[in-house]
Structure formats: C-alpha cells, structure tokens
Image (spheres, rainbow, N blue to C red):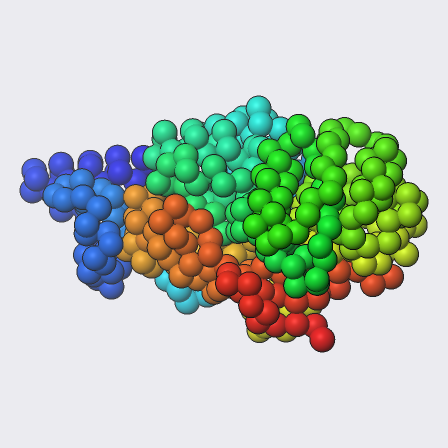
Length: 416
C-alpha cells in the first residue's frame, strides 16, 4: 500500500537516527491510533504501526463503482450525486477525517456487467484506494467481492442483496439488507393482509430474482400460504401475457414479481390487462420504475426498499432537502441514499479503527452500529446489515411511503 511503504521508509530512517516524523500527524491523531483497542489487536510491532498509519493524513481514499450507462444509469447518477454531496459535507465538517474519491472524483462504470465491473475495480485499484464502495447490483458485485477479498481490500457493497456477497471474505461488508430478509418480509406482508393464495413470476436468468423468489416462497409455505403458480421469464422478455394469464387462472390474490425496474411496467401492464386486480409486489429493484401511461395500473402495487424519501426522520428530511436543492428529484432514489450513507460509514470505521488505511478501516467496520438515511444499521458477523425495511406503494403513478418495519417485522413508522 502507498501509506505502508511510506511508513516503512520512515521507520528505517528512524532506526538510523534520522528524525523525519514531524508533521505526519497531530498528537491527538497519534493518540487515537494508539488508544484504539480495535486497531491495536489487528497486529503487533512494526506491522501494527504500518496498519494504523492511515491516521497520518486522516484522508480516506475511496474508489466508487456503480452503473453509469445503460438502462440502470439513473442509479449511477444518484450514486455520483450522493457521493459528491456526502464528501463535500464530510470534508467541511469537524470529524477530523476527509474523503478523497479516486478516479478524479468520478464513479467508475460497471455498466451492470460483470466483466465491465472487474475493469472498473482494476481501474480503481491502480490508484491505491483504502476502500471501494459499490456496487448496487449483486451480479456485478460478486466478482468484485471475490477479488477484493483476495486483495485484502475493504469492499462496502451498496444495494447488492445477494446473500453470497459478504461470504466472499472478511473484508466485505454491505449497508443494505439481504434477499432472504427482503423475501421474508414480503411474505409477512402477505400474511398480515390475510391473503391465502399467491403467484410468483421471476427471471430465471437473474441471481437477484432467484434469491428473492426462493426466500418469498419458503416463507409463504412456512406461514401456510399457498403458492398457486410459479412462472418463469427472462430479463430480456417483453411479453408477459402468458404468465399473467396463468397467474390469474391459478386463483392467486397476490402476485410477486422480484425483478428490476426496466421490465416492471411491462409485467404490471400485462397482469392488469389479464384481469388481475390483486396486489402486485416487487423488491428494491422496482425503485425508479417508469409508470408513465400506466398510472392507474400501478394502483395496489407495492415494493420493498431501503428507505423512503417521505420518511419523517431528521436524517431523511435533511438528506432529501439538500439533495433536491442540488440535483432535483430525478435521481433521488434508494441507491443515492445507500451511497451517501456509505461515505459516512467509512468515516465511522476510521474513527473506530484508529486510522484510514485499509486494515484499520476493516477493523473499524466490523460490528459497527450506524444511524443514517437508511435507518439504524448494525453489521452482523458476516458484515451484513441488520436494519429496517420500507414498504412503498403508488398513488396516481407516484411512489408513496406506506410503512417501515424493523428487523423483527414490527411496524415502527407509517404514513397513516
């Protein structure tokens, strides 16, 4: 690492009696590194000095990855805006830490493609960051997580809900919930509504869709809810009339469609045209779906998400107000909220770990409890976020907050 090499040189110089350490950090910074139990237990001797050396400049060098082009570019736009805003706030604040975004401050584009994601990862690694934040999609985050674990690089995933992401290594974390939890909560919603029959249509070529489908079906069956129809589609499909007709014929009162935003209008339109009048629900991949021309068909539709811009908590109100003033509302999505929180989580990790080098950040991230736009988050032993979940609905085609449930499934806030 860049900082470790510099510290090694200084250590050797000190052994020769040359004092070159003046100006590398204040006494307060040095005490923070030495007094941190987390940092001191990561290693010993000269290695411990190298690992905690990030406190010398108090700058966290961060690489950021998201989808900046293609059909999911709205997520990348939100990520870039949120990162810019968070970094501006942090660097002007009094935490004692600053963030520098490598790649000239730009989010590297994964184009929602695994190969391109690795190109983005390698591009950022060439600039020697202390941490990498991203990506929003599990399919592109999984290969990056594998490599980051091999490199000993901290990867803070944002939106990658596939359960396997953090299992790649102990330097991998996330600030979003995981698919089993999201599917479980969707099934709990069904139970609370007194619905006894459900249908599922999922994309068999997408890991995200498969993960949510499996969790939802498992929890429905555990709660005595009958799954009357399970239909398959592909992420490239444009016609859902056959699956919709079969879902209606099955007698289902609820339709679960755990797919991404680009196909959501097609599915909802097909289901309503087939005569399905019950609830249609999706996961966080619905965030940002275009309802234009289908406003009435989205009535009685819901999706689970990481936050709601209508939440009245001070953190959300402050974030939404500042973001809207700077960038408008087009890219004000959950992706933006997650990337915004990620910047502040890195600062908290530096405070906990006693430095801004990767080893200190990893030590400081383990088991961290954080409160932000996405609510109260505690990272478990796998680096997964234990947090609340939001249910959004639609009114006249506009997304509206319905309620927020805690990790135990209890309603903690509601729009009513």
